[in-house]
Each structure stands twice: as C-alpha cells, then as structure tokens.
Length: 264
Ligand SMILES: Cc1cc2nc3c(=O)[nH]c(=O)nc-3n(C[C@H](O)[C@H](O)[C@H](O)COP(=O)(O)O)c2cc1C
Image (cartoon, rainbow, N blue to C red; front, side, top):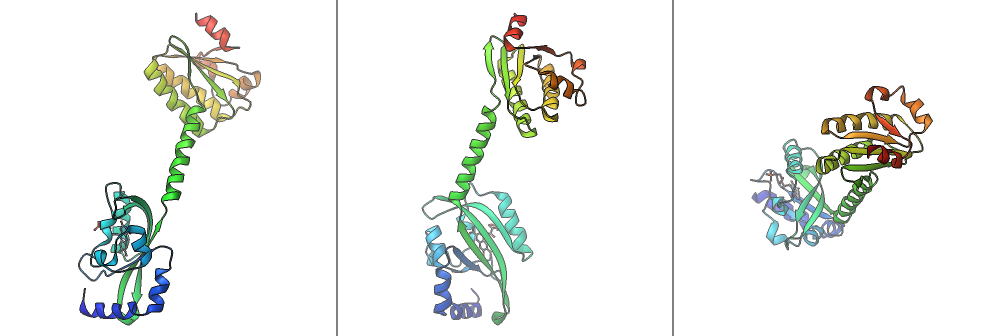
C-alpha cells in the first residue's frame, strides 16, 4: 500500500464515528485501491467479516476474487471487469464462497468514489447475501416448469397409441411446452398414433389452431399419425382464418373411444 494512502486511510479509519456506523450497515462493505497493483482491498467492515468468515487481517492487501469458486458465473466477472475498467458502477448477482467453503449468493454493487481530500478514486463494494431469495426463485422456477410439464400429460393407452388431453386455455408458452413434450415422447415411444382430445377445451384462440397445425407437421416428420377428438362445432368454424385443416387431411372423431375403435 502506498505510504501516503495508508496514512490517509488510517486517518479515516480512526474516525470512530464513521467506522462504527459502517460496521452497523447490514451488508459487507469493502474499499479497494485501484492505483495499487491488482486493486487490493484496503478496508472491510464487520458486515464483510460476518458474511464471509474472513477476518480483516486475512484479506486486506488481497484482490476480492478470493471469494470466487467453481460456480461463479464468468459472465458476471466480465461485467465487473468492464465496469471497473471504465470506472462505472456495476451490479451483479454471483455465487461466492465463505471461508468454510459454504456457497452464498452475493448481490454485489461496486461504485467508484472520488475522495477529494486524497485526490484519488477508490472503489467501494457492497455485498448482500441474497441466498434465501435466490433459492426461493430457483424452487419457484422448478415448480413452474413441473406444472407446465404436468399440464400437458401424454397417456399411453395401448401399444403405439397415446392420448394427449388438452385442458383449459392454451397460450404460446404452454403450446411450446406441449410440442417439446410430444416430440420427446414420440421419439421414445415410436407411437403410430397420437390422439389429441379437445373435449375439455373451453375457449379457442389462435394459439390452439396454430398448435394443431404445428403438431401435425411435427408428427408427420416423425412418422406418427395425428387424430383429433372432441372437436366442438364452434372450433371448426373459428379455425378457418388460422389454418385450413381440410388441407392437412386430419382424421377426427367425436370421442377418444370412437377413435380407438376405428384404429383397431
Ligand atoms: C470494491 C470491490 C469489491 C469487490 N467485491 C467482490 C466480491 O464481493 N465478490 C467477488 O466475487 N468479486 C468482487 N470484486 C471483483 C474482483 O475483485 C475482480 O474485480 C473480479 O474478479 C474481476 O477481475 P479478475 O478477472 O481480474 O478476477 C470486487 C471488486 C472491487 C473493486
């Protein structure tokens, strides 16, 4: 550390009032000196010690990257490097590791601070532990994809015949999920027939018409015949502007039972 920087910082740190106030901030606070080789830490608060498990003596003089590990996203680091290079504020969420090896999600904010008294710019970093929020988000996203997956169940009813009942409202996202599920299922099962049952669909929209069109194309490529059951008259009328199903020569029956009977 440059002698004169050291002296001036000592002066600042000796200001008990400010030091105590920063220690009470419910987050980690780090100050680094970009004028020194590898931008080392020159100050940490108590919040940083509590969050990371490292004591001030162990980290002052080091670059903050010692908190990183296997799971740290290289894109977040690139964003930090870019920000520091241009002396701009950056905010990232990244995986860091405590002294005992435990991973935590760090909401890190770094900003340049010009100290007039010292005629120098320093970087101040603020670390917030957002592990609980991140884990809740990951869980919610897992459940959301589970719900979507379960909302388009494909039921094998006989050898090489499966039924896909459409229930409720179909939007773009559900449609994509359905197409993914079907292509995965048909690849594994090598079904000859897939019966798409629309008897539980209450409102028809453009997505459902396009869905049938795309599903038919997909199954055609995979050598599986699409059969539609449970079409209500209003669906047939509404489908005209979106897709010409007569062109697709789709087979359609009133019920799944009738379709199965006809296949046999
Ligand atoms: C003030 C300050 C605080 C920082 N705090 C953290 C931190 O808490 N966690 C972390 O992973 N990186 C932190 N960094 C980023 C690293 O020190 C380093 O800039 C980053 O790893 C990108 O540079 P590199 O590719 O040379 O490692 C901080 C940087 C500065 C300037």
